[in-house]
Image 1 (spheres, rainbow, N blue to C red):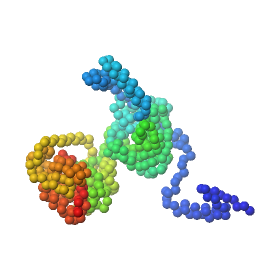
Image 2: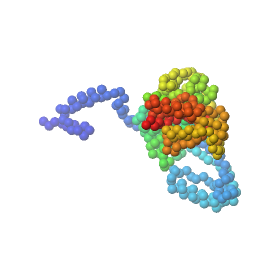
Image 3: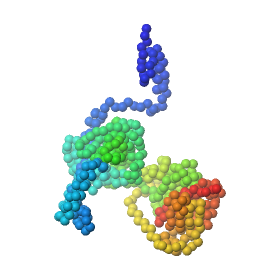
Image 4: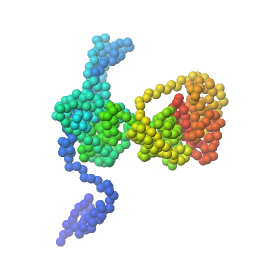
Length: 512
């Protein structure tokens, strides 16, 4: 009797071997680690989309544009700037064509009457989070808008008012007034979403109306230099212009992200889209709802990253944490005893893996909470308690005057670091614009091929500390460098003051 053959993944096996093959497979499945077996993909997104679409809205904002009286070409002429260039993807030949066309008309129209102010309209997306009419979107969708219109899926229009906004993570909360409860969606836990999970994006690309796209979560914790709290989710679900402010859903129909940006050379989707995580956005939205603005925790420090050289000079086993470069006078950190040179390892029970984690952790900590902080100081861990303050918008102004005067004090050249140093004198203070209360040793020259130049040190900088000890003379610096060499260290840590901006610099030592 012929034995039936079963083909599995390209392998031919006889029926008599099938039972043992299946048994082995079953054992492998049972022994597989939890979560290692991928979930089956959805049969479709239609039911989920039908449920969620009514809560996703189109946002249209108008802004009055006043003509630029300085445009129009020739020196001293005030020409008519003409109409705006139609919106084409960057790099499109149509974009260049219209620019050339309008520029020619503009030159020909010089001397004509000034054009009147006109309205400019932009489109975006948003979603309703409360049946009473609270709508979440990106701040850049409604920034500088004179009028904001929210359009539901059934084409019902509402005039919207701005409840509040947060420019740091690009969020805005709007309110519309309806005579009946509106469809709404809920935030989910974005921290539970894993790379490879299915996601669905809904928005209004190019003003076409509600559109649904699907894909997977491509990456987490992306930093795209959009702001101080970058922590974006990345997806390959198609996100285009007009999707800004729209929601990204998980398969439970929960909002896990707010579509904000794309990476694209052409202006269209190439499968690299970014969304603000729900767990980052939700507390900010709640604060805007309650206070009209975001309320963030504040520590009062300037920080920098811990490089390999800095870690070695401080005795850390690996580069991690956030290095305190300076503390603000009277701020929470100073009152708690945090010092320049400390490396923050944990804050309020959360690990600070690198520098960029600390601002977000502090920002999310409730104001006035007393939080435990673990710092690395003098080669050991120290635990402190800090009462978290509230972040304020402060403007910092610094000037760096300099004059062409030669130093008159003796100059010590530290060849191992590529530096020329001098004790501070009135002449040097005047030359480099240094305040009377600045103490330390001034850098007068840099070896372009030395380690100091490689780390960005420049003439006029003041060395305040070496190996976390204060210095006021070149002799003290030389002594500290000798001590570091004798102890076998590969680098030495300097605290450098540049016009009031303090930062640590680890310079390699030549121990030969």
